[in-house]
Image (cartoon, rainbow, N blue to C red; front, side):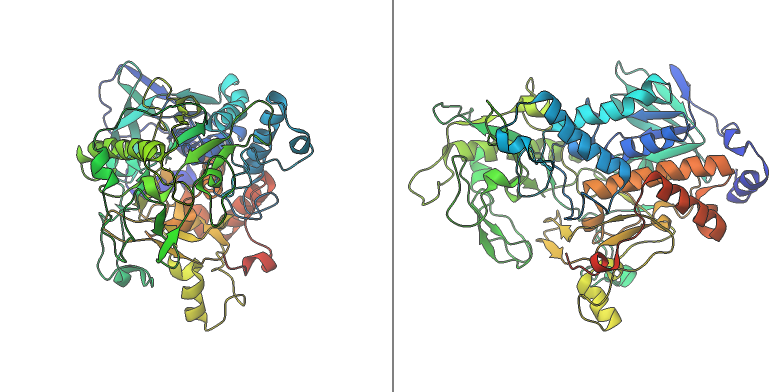
Length: 565
């Protein structure tokens, strides 16, 4: 079915969205049908399923790992958020998730007196977020939010599930085949599909037009884009882990494979990295000059950032009878020696090497890492907390790598640095920071805010960390330029290598997923396809009204909108 035929049917046939899929399906062990298939139950995938289900759609939601929740759970990354997150700049459902996290602790833990009085409890008191919490708590809350829809039959959760093939008929996805537990072939079919995988897997399998890595300055006109496109230049990924400290015990693990190589490794970066990767000196992300940090699990440090408290997810000062638990997602275990997709079997090898790097970092901290003042080395009492990450029977690290950059759709509209970057917009508008906002998008479907934060990359680039403005999520960035019935709901939307750096965080991904779920419900009810909604002023206004009613913030107050991040 070509695009013209698809659009005609959508416009004039009341039940076009229920038409049988074209294209011959492969022989499989089982087939399941729904109104919507969401591949990937990370932050965006879960938000998408919740939005579609509350609008009455039947959803199949799949997940590769044993835990749903992506960044929040299997990747073990506390939420990176903006300073206004308690009141605005997200969705009502995301704020409900945050409230439920706090409520989980209130129902299941014994607080200290001060913590019990704090309505905005930060379980870990980590400095990176106002809500640093354990991955297992996020998992419990997400399952609780899905529970009524699963019981009612509106959501069917399938895990683990890895997509292996995608059926395509011109501009339409017609089926997805994958291997759930037991390696039986399962075919999933629906009028709409959502790619909420962490690396845009359906885009590659379905031959949906997409980009990877860094676009050229010639293509995007971005100040920080390279002269030539570098599709294999991806942001570093990280295998996170949790640990606590037992000061009177020796928990030293066996020396990991390749420890000496990683201990002596000096990154080759442009601009240059200041020395060894396993060190308390690193590149300052903004100034790109040497920056000294500290580490002490026993108490405050005299000067600078204490990495122990940076991403701490359990603070002993908040609870009775517990130790601090620190989540390690630091420059010292960023892996940039290869990519996780687009390179065949090498991807598996790089993921394995990244796990070894994290083990080596942990061992280095136990045995050789200098104490503040430099008089002692190592903390033998550090203990890997695989139980926190659900991997106590494995290597004790996070189930999945924290992935910062995905394949990205070639979209109807692409957000560039010139739309959201402070310096880029100041130059474009001839105004001073504080006098202007990010580009206003008439088709906004959500909001977000974060610095343009790119970690060192596999192409040898050091940090790119520049100021941005609170931004909107344009509908055009969610619609592929050609394919009609597949939408993105993760880090695979129409951004660039540069702007992905501020659109990749937890609350933004949630807002993207929720907007996509609402969009599919809207299109199903109106018998339209997504690009028609964007092109028709009345349909767009009606859809935005639906989003607003559901609790999505579509714009920023003017005083916040001009705030430089």
